Amino acid sequence: MDCKEFERMIPDYIAGRMDHQSLKKFSEHMENCRDCQEELTIQFLVTEGVSRLEDGSVFDLQGELDERLKAGKKKIRRYDRFLKAGLALEAAAAGCLAAAILWFLI
Image (cartoon, rainbow, N blue to C red; front, side, top):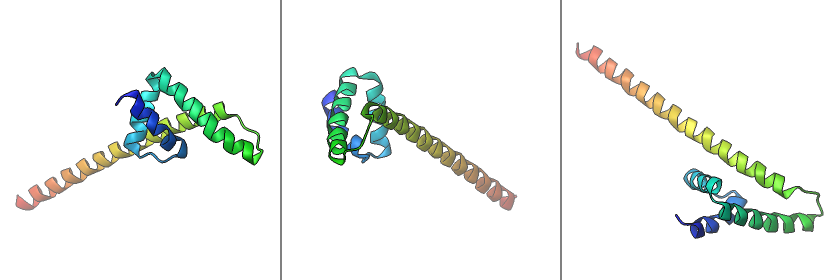
């Protein structure tokens, strides 16, 4: 994907509407692309800032964006560990099934 495609993903990221695969690609790209990081910051500040100004609440938007990025990475790691654990359980179940079949045949 090029930067334009990632820039189009920013509104979905801000709204929290990304699936795991999209979030993972987006997060990896954001770690390495200064231009997209700047665009994310701008869109986040505008989107959230306008909303907060209307509410009249006090806010630290840069801090909130940093926390969202950290939370996204944590979510990715947790999901990846869950997938690995599922694969390990599936392999263990297949091994048990194979052992039971061998025991039955012998």
